[in-house]
Picture 1 (tube, rainbow, N blue to C red):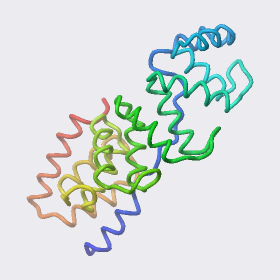
Picture 2 (cartoon, one colour; picture 1 turned 90 degrees about the horizontal axis):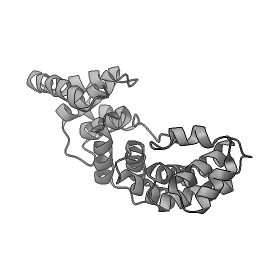
Picture 3 (cartoon, helix red, strand yellow; picture 1 turned 60 degrees about the horizontal axis):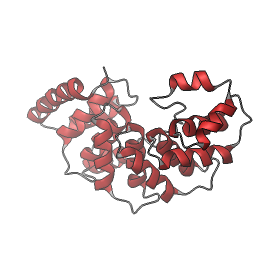
Picture 4 (cartoon, rainbow, N blue to C red; picture 1 turned 120 degrees about the horizontal axis):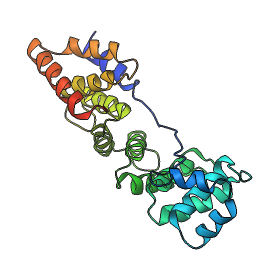
Length: 230
């Protein structure tokens, strides 16, 4: 397999957006259970400015939980919670703008809310922000920024980000081309069950010297210990 054809193959394999709506915030699992049968009390708390209540009311509207489904109301309360810094609300608002659910599709708004959530450390937001930079949606395409956000998510154990970061190293996109790093990150994703890595890893092996391959295998082992979800 020659280098040019292999690099083109890698580019078409990049993993895309994660379209996962977070239904419950980390602090509110019990609250949802308690409030599901009392939407009026939930609304009263939301109207008094309780950020968690605003978030839970937004989710109730979005999924039709104990209340008639209403995307417009869901987005309204989601924005209220997001503006108060609820990280899951920020991510969900970014996702709704990204996909055009309940609001007009607006990738720039998606970038803004993903970034707010990503800067608080939410791995899904970091990953999706990387995808938007990778694709030039809502921002000027920027491989370096894509790689930076993929790395943040990869270091939290997110397999899709590990895979994408590995491909960027393999292709020299946003980072210096480095087959050893590419193999290590893709191998880490493979160790977490990420699909369709066998052929990619084989192609990388064909590009490396025996010494590079030995380093790559050792680095992949180290990364799996540090960056794989246990």
